[in-house]
Length: 368
Image (cartoon, rainbow, N blue to C red; front, side, top):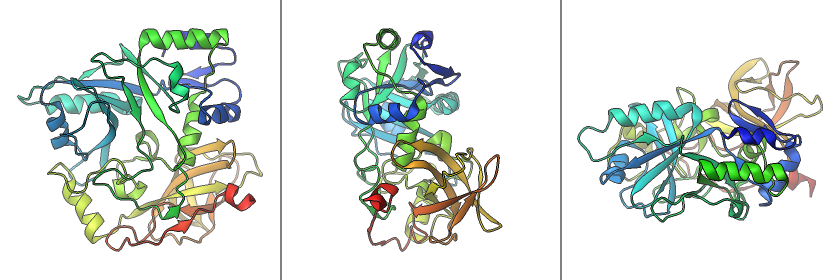
């Protein structure tokens, strides 16, 4: 990330990038309304040029990519032989190169794996992060940024979540889905454009939001992310990732047998829940905090945020057998806090997943 972001008034940065500018709640509101953009220093860019790129990626990943049109957005997962998530990336193609946006903590391992799988095919994956950065926001918000277009197609990834893409399947059984109104896109920009954005923000000509604000909007939309919801046991089914990252009827790929078996014949052993946290103690749990029913540990917190409308919220992965109406306790550095759960992936997801759609009961809904 450009060092020039440090010159923006109020900027707080760490090794991942711009965290906030002093008021994450205000930044969330501006970001959601399209009045700000978020420099996403916790993303990396991988370029995959070559004539065989789409069929090659199709054969390796959970997503059907052979017919991906220039400018079309999707996402992919790379699974281990048992169907567990190893890598994840957002995908956009420009007709000459496929561009992957990956979490910074996963990018090196993802690229190394791709390089090992080239064989004799006409593909040349490379780390393009020295040349390109990523900024996020709504479609209107990103109008202030000029996306890179090395082959004439603007490199803008439009998040398909929470829609159900071709070949996908949704487990969340609430209507409307809390992410239904979320308008999110990520633009790949040149490093020169990133510096222009930083300079404009330092002058007060452009509004920014930090990573804290961007992640809070993600958590409120129940949107899984590699750096948060994924551990060594994660199956896509557990976090409702079949919606946008898995094509259930495409050709063979590593882990496909498990994907089909769990979806058609079984149930995922864990399930994602959304938590409304008791905010009276003003203490948020950390990533990995234990979630309990009474004295029984049933899962862990994967993401946590202070949302500008919903207050303290979190995502957690719990055992499938955890009662859906159970009150939960979440450990914090000071004392356990109580949490009410909203079902994201129902216990019956999988073989018998004919789940009736239910109304969403958020704090905003209850307040009306």
